[in-house]
Image 1 (spheres, helix red, strand yellow):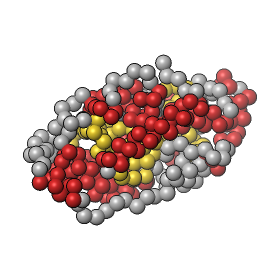
Image 2 (cartoon, helix red, strand yellow):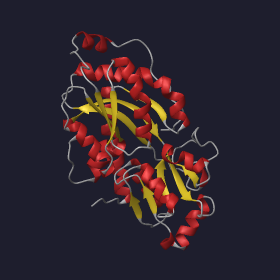
Image 3 (cartoon, one colour):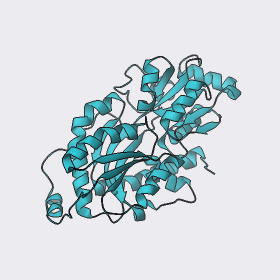
Length: 321
């Protein structure tokens, strides 16, 4: 699926929402904790901190953003899965923790279908392939150099099982490269590793590297989407730069603990749908593409993405110990 800007679904409240609101509990009755499964500086964190004040104004309670990075998003999502199902703990969760890790890892701390209630898809996330300022050339030249001197190159990404991990693995597979992978606890630490010269390359989400690229401290060799992104309009796609047919993007959505009242889930999903247009310009400016789905569609999307990623994992022979 391309990443041209999608129309957000706007309109009147659905009959299901009207019925659910009539039966809604007194919610929220206290502050809401919004758990982000990545470190500050990543797309998920940017989105959470952008939407939190709008939810506060809408629901009349504080929304506190809490970063719980690590284990490819599993730590943050597990915190949501084990929270009280009363609508006062929500999560911003990515493809890795919801669709990739359950396929990739033999043991998971939560079951997506059993322990979580999907609220709504929010964003599609293209990634950037970045290099340190000392790494010369465009993507074709970097690929040639990595083949000639593989010991000089390693690839950072934002955590095992994340969309960044799969995007990096697919790139190496299509380029015919063998190089060490260096997982970090989110995009910002991975970008910092490339900046420090700890790794030559990195696949990170765009908010984590945008300022560094604009300052000339990192070079963006390509973006991983099918089309160029508004935040980095001069940067080619991987397909344009070197590998025709390449595309690999991530996504984020809101989740709640399983058992959260359906009325609360629907109110949150409608809030997400109605608030995204106001954030669209800010999100597009950092490389995130608004893309809303309601609870049922999001649940089906999570399942279909698991099927898709299972095929990518097999083809790339990805292993996580």
